[in-house]
Amino acid sequence: RAVIDTVSAGHARWPGGSWLIWYPLLPAGRHAELLAVGIGGSAWVTIPGELETRLGREIKTAGAARFDRVFVAGVSNDYLGYLLTPEATVHPSYIACASLYGERGGELMRDGAVLLLERLAHARDAAGAGR
Image: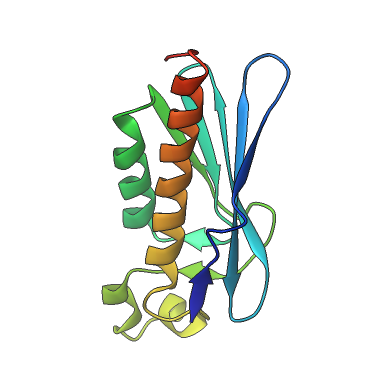
């Protein structure tokens, strides 16, 4: 079971106008972070594991409304294993058996990444940086 702790999320501005947003994630009692970085019209978001392709595409689609390009960097800052959709966890397979965070683990990562991209865009817009 994964729990997202939104209270301690924060942001910082780097020299040169890029933004860094982080989002702590606490799956099964472990600590891991998602990061989002924006430079110009592009955004990068990190995932501490191997995210199922569909979830990565959903992150990119959600971010496309606010950024010219969205990049999802998997296996970043930590390795929590395979992060799957609920549908993928119920079919016997190598990745389903090796997934440690259950049927909601991948969706929680996706939702955290989308939230970070929204916060990143809001911070950029509030600073008047635009695309």
